[in-house]
Amino acid sequence: MESQPLSKPSAADLAPSPQPEQLDSIKAQLDLILLALESLVGLGSEAMLEAAKQLGLQDLMSDRVTLWRLRQASPLRKGQGRKKLDVDEARGLVLVSIHLAQQYQSNIRKAVTLLETATAQNKPPHRIGLLGDYLDTFSNFYAERMTADDIPTTEHLRDLALKLLVDLLFYSQSGGTRRLWLALLERAR
Image (cartoon, rainbow, N blue to C red; front, side, top):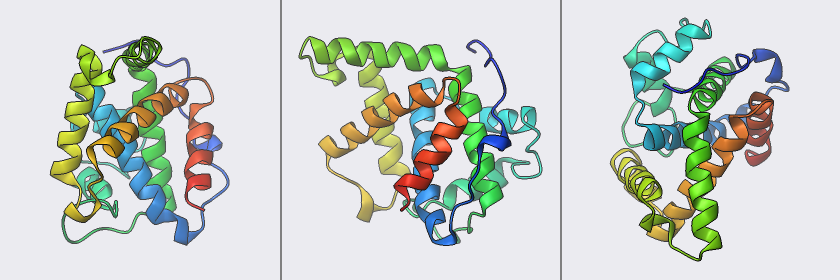
């Protein structure tokens, strides 16, 4: 595990509240952020549940089934019986995402540095070991978990994965909780 964050993500950074019609977009965006984290550092539901416990969010994410239902709330996901995500659950997922991004900041930073180097040298990112593994894992997870109607082209999926990687670097830094929350609200307009 990587170095601990300087401070825990705070619910105080999660204002203003989204409009009900924004929640579908927020659900999808949060699921993609967690998918990027899973793909890069190989964490699973246990790490997410442990982060929820450390943040005092056990009431929102008490077990794997509850977490799975929250993740299934994404409109991009395969499966039936999607649960509606409420504002408190969205805030909880933001706090967990930021907590994990802070824990794995050095992994994220290393991957972004490799991406910058590959770009500067005009090399395809998938030819760089860590980035290739990340892109493959992200693409595989996306294909396994998301509806067939929503699977983008290989190039679009690669661009999405790389954008999420860079976003994770920003979210892993000081002020990341507020930065992510405002980005979610802005993108949901």
